[in-house]
Image (cartoon, rainbow over the protein chains, first blue to last red):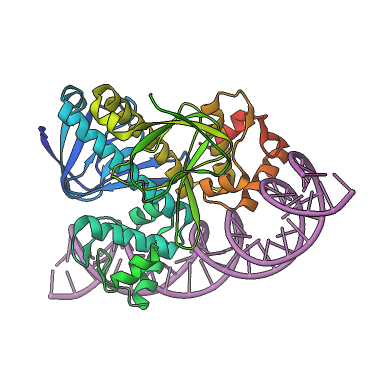
Length: 191
Length: 191
DNA sequence: CGTTAGCTTGAGGTGCATCAAGGGACGTGG
DNA sequence: CCACGTCCCTTGATGCACCTCAAGCTAACG
């Protein structure tokens, strides 16, 4: 993927909902969130992107979500047009779109049918699987980000993690460092 | 799209979660639902497909959802391999996947952040937009289907529709025939 | 007309939200 | 090096939107 690397500070915008879809992006380091807002400010985070992930491709000629850096982040971009030219690239994009769709479907199940405990368990297991960080997670995102991803409030996320620790499922070293001490139980919570 | 037309009776399965991804399908008439289940039977409907819609394409070599006919339905199928051969088809599939992704993202916002009233309004407006049926909707799906799509219970869907009628937003001729009498207000509820 | 499946309505309970206050870590300036 | 502010997180008390349980209604169909 050819493009200029760009450094982003925390909360810095990559693109806004409704603006032209001209580039696609790849995360080099850090993390990016995409989200949609309701008129009164309610926010739903659609996806987190971690190093190696592509993001920003759209069905239409404008972005349906906004994208921001979760923390200090480096990304590279490629012109959308470069995808259309190259058949190889286009086919890769198609695979990525389908993978994104699969992830969105997983989250639909979580938001539609799981309890707070199950949601947080799903989030932890999913994050662990993606980072291959054994059982020691270094979360780049805040409690508010997690809440807005899981359709909960920050208080519920915090209480749920505290309860998980009380049950011996996790160990919270500090807010951003969480160890999965009984991963099998967490996995069971995702059914 | 080449393939044999198949008639399905109500609730008949098209494919099951976990089975091989060999065909993609197109709805000719009727409606299809795709869904995922939790171990205890909780169901999340991922999408409804209406005449003209393609469904069944997957990121992996097996289906991540199950698919069933919502009512008497006719579909046609095409071999997955026919897509890989034809560059034109492949590009169409990519567009479809991106459109599906966009729809999934819309539903994520609904499930994560909207109230019951807003969810039902979103559902009605979305269905009306897709069928271009002016303001008289003929719903092929049951209240249970709507509930499992919106992350609610059947009772809440029913009560919400009753309340909408009391507010003059809709007129419920019978359970499957709903008129949108004040569509602008419903649209506002989706913000 | 009776049966049944799906829908509606009612009463009561609960899981999570809301509102409020109190830590804890980190940075900044004296 | 310590006071102080700020941001984020945690904890507590209370409320409410939606769920659960239960019963009645309606329409389609034999």
